[in-house]
Length: 381
Image 1 (cartoon, rainbow, N blue to C red):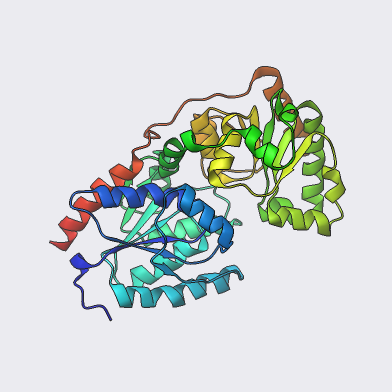
Image 2: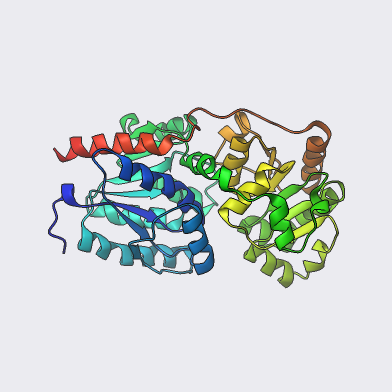
């Protein structure tokens, strides 16, 4: 058991899945640069555990190696959440904690927040208040519950505050700081490799994208786990690829399901450029030069808005409405005809260009560090 007083203990920062890394990297830098420096302990739960991809992401983002890796691995939502809780509590016992800082909406976010709250350790949630209003999504449950037990709720857009108020969360707990994902994007975009280099490494010549291209990512279980949904989406993408080559960074889950459903040959068209999952910098390079992005990812909706690239989101709802209201995002649902029509509209007119939302300026993490430093001093005094 740690003998440190809370003021001497670290701020425990938790990552568990790929999107967390892009959010945590600028936060860790800002906490270290704060005067006085805020000591941190980086805990990786191991919720996503592709070793090669993890190493690459940590290197690309200049994120320090984790001090602790819980190595939880895969499992059902219940098993994974419970295992993270079991393994995280001894970390607090061993090191103490001034606060536990969690980001996003993955199982690790909720699990570590629960442990901290029950130990009377302040919970800091970055990216609070986002709502899809679809409780069939496990991430929505994680968001709602994490916000309920958080002491500080840092938000990326002002609409989040109305969501939190409706759920009875006191206004003084929520602080609008902007979007740390954009901090990472702006810091790393100059390092992103040109798309032609990526294609060359995969055996594709530059002529394949000389006239423009789109980028596709598809991984949500609701889209890829059922042949009656996945098949029509792939067929729509096939039709779009006749007009615009599509660089498809194929997620392992999607690839496996295409194989299981006997649909792999549907990608055997010259308009598809199939790549394995890409690193963070590689995806930035691909998206920045694309004519459009077609995705079911949450983070990519934000990144395309920051890049000014039209985004067609293959989902019925989004927890990031600002990307639709102010940015470049269009929700098209899973209807293949709507997807075809939306892509045609982009090809005909250039698509939405939008504007950069408030506080998406690369300084969100600095605002977090400044507020958190003051808050901790006030509450420990």
